Image (cartoon, rainbow, N blue to C red; front, side):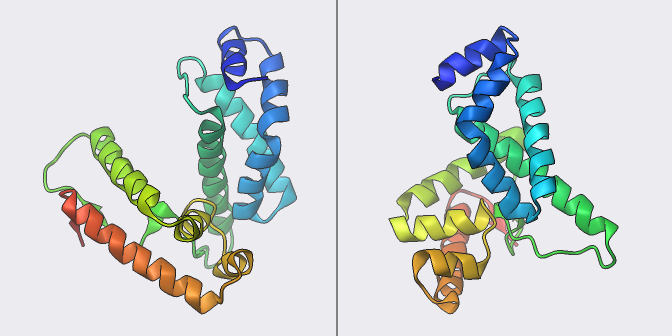
Length: 187
């Protein structure tokens, strides 16, 4: 079944849309959740929360890319779950290094609405990622979207962990420059 058909079913409030969504994107979304949480139980719960989130947000939303829409929802739910899980433990801190947690902060020179600000940053990051070679793009996305460990990326890409660290450092530095060119002040 196509994404457009699933979205149409969601607009009609047809509960079979959830079954079709599950058939199409369960593995993809589960792998995102499991990669972040490392727990089958938590990943399954996040998957259920994602399906509920899609049901509640379509309509009014009508995403162009249903897979990416589901991926974003499951990623956010999983990151929130990870934060809640680690806050319950002593020392509650964990090293999460997602695209949202770079080692630099972005501040806008003008006080513009948050959505416009986020949209401008998203556009710069998307353009930056699109300009990368396939290998660098995979490394960047695996680290900052899927939150893979350096070791997992190194194994996947057949590189040394140190090489992956160097590539990521250089990519962050290049992204800082691109953001500065886009008018954002980097602290």
